[in-house]
Image 1 (cartoon, rainbow, N blue to C red):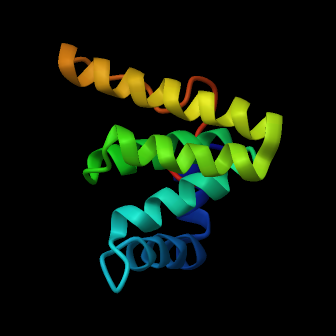
Image 2 (image 1 turned 180 degrees about the horizontal axis):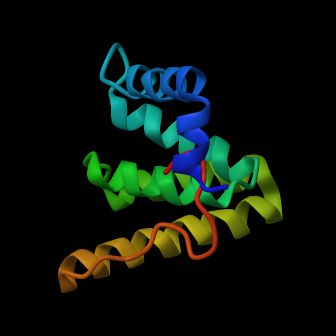
Length: 119
């Protein structure tokens, strides 16, 4: 079953999750982009690749700078040790792919092998 079909079958719950994400990552006392960076850090620590890629993309689209991303990934490495470093490299690699795709005016796939909850 793909994510679209799943969301149709679980519309009330899935819709609530979508609305929750929209509210959680909007500007408030904390800027929305900082909340997206927190979500990225948590996603990297829990090793959710679709989430890492999804939050990197959202961060990029919401004006996060490369320096802000790198400082966030420093925290991931500090809290996650060697696995944190690996997941930071995955996040940064995807960031660079996004950057290059925009410069080249081509679209890249968010995930190579599966859809995820953070798409």
